[in-house]
Structures are given as structure tokens and as C-alpha cells.
Length: 338
Image 1 (cartoon, rainbow, N blue to C red):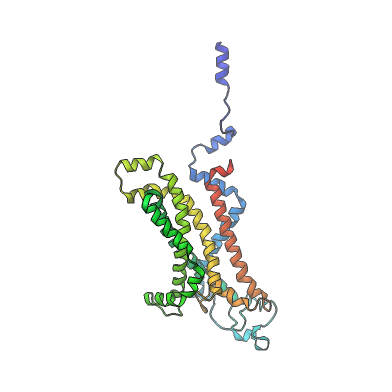
Image 2: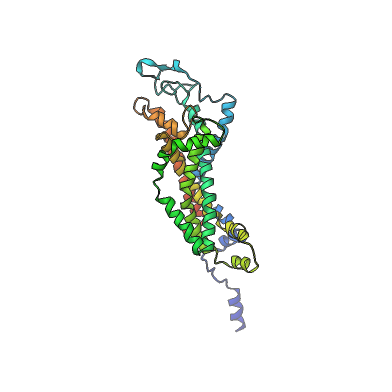
């Protein structure tokens, strides 16, 4: 009996998780954040998307400095590089591509396409990022309040969400554009044609119609978080609603908020391009990806490079953000790997 007992003690019981011993030792002591980062790094497609997004942000941040030091020149006319006999098309092949103008020049004006597209990244990023932050902050706060409070508070916020979603946002945006931009011009420094009031109006409209989706997602997460023990402990200890909202619940929502952020950004980048096509938003000569694309549509066949460059860049940015959001969602949800 003694020998059998010692033999049983010497045997190693199999790990319930089914992972080899070496793998278990690697997982020991790692926080959920480190485990999520490890899963994200193993996803090659998400890493490629992350690199593209990082390059886009660096390019957008560096563009104003490059313009200031004269490396980029998005506003100077070079009409000598265009041919009036062809309707102002660039002289030369492929839209006037040369060492001085690697992506050619703009028809009729002769402005450098590379400078305008590169500088346009800054304004497109500023509009999309500001609108995304406002929509997420407003939606997250209302979602937390609705999910935790319940009752008439939840019902009131829910009806406000339904009411906002029921409005035809595009039609209202077009109908109120002149009034809204003029109102922004009165509030902010600048005139009706300056980029700041036009950009502020687009940001306001995108955030106004973007927060309901965020609020619904956060409310659904709060309905689960509010039942946990640490929330009950905070309530029993007499913590204020503000502390419960922002100290207890909000830190446990960073994963869905991060995923919503990466999925909302590309939607707003595409929305800025669509609004520019509808002649709402920042207007030339200040470049954005949207108004550069709008200017190039008339030359889609005569100058394909000018049309293809902003369209391809918008596509790459939107796809990269979406892939990044999908990768983060998979990395932050361990159940996707079971």
C-alpha cells in the first residue's frame, strides 16, 4: 500500500486546461493585458494594420511641420505645368509625374498632388479623431448612467437614443449646413469660408449622430459589470454615484471602448469624404482627403493618377482601421481562442 501511494504521489496529474506544462509556465504570472497583447502580436494581419495606422498618424502629425519648413507646398499654383489646350490637364505622362512632383500635379491649378494629399491627412485625422472622441465620451457617459441606474433614467436615455437614430442625418446635415456653419463662424474665430467653422460643423454633426451607437454598446456592458462584487461593495460602503460610474465601472470598460474607437474612426474618415463630395465640410484650398477626392472625380478618366491616389489612400486607411479593430476585439476576448 505504501509503494502504491508513493507511486500515485509521484505521478503528475494532467492539467485541466489541456495545455502542456511548458505553456502553463509561460502563462503563469501574466496579467490579462499582457495575455491580450500576446494574442494580438501573433495575429500578423492585425500587426500589419497596426503599422499602417501608425504610419498614417505619423504622416498626419508631421505634415504641418513639413509645410512650415517648405518641404510640402499644397497651395502654390504651377499653371505652367498644365496644358490649356487639353482643358488644363498636366503636361507629360501619368498626370505630370516627375522628381519634383512624385504623384503629379492637379489639373488646371498645377498644385502638387503629394503635398495636398499628405497635408489633407492632417485635417481628415483631426476631424475624424475629434468627432470620435466626442461621440465616445458622450455615449459612454450616458451608457454608464443608463445601464447602472435603470428605471426611468434608462428609459429616458433609451428614448433619446431612438429619437436621435430616427432622424435622417444626411438630409438634416445638408439642410442645416449653411445655418450651422454660420453659427460656428459666429462662435469660433474665422469666416464662413475658413476651415475652422466648416470643420467644427462636420465634427458636431458626426458626434451628434454617432453617440447613440456607443451608448447602446456601453449600456449592454454595464448591465453585466454592475452585478459584480466590487460594485456591490462600493454601494454598501456608501460610494457616490460619480465614484461608482468613473472609478469602479469605467475602468472595466476600456476594452469595448478601445474596440469602438478603432471601428468608429474609419467610419468618420469615410463620412468626411462623403460630406466633402456633397460640398459640406472644409473647402479648398485647404486640403482634406475628401475634398481632394471630390476635385479628382471630374478627371477620373483623363487623369487617373490624380483620382486614384486619394481614393486608394482612403481605402487603405479605412480597411486598416477595421482590421485593427477586429484584431483588438479578438485579442481582448479570450473566448475567441477556445
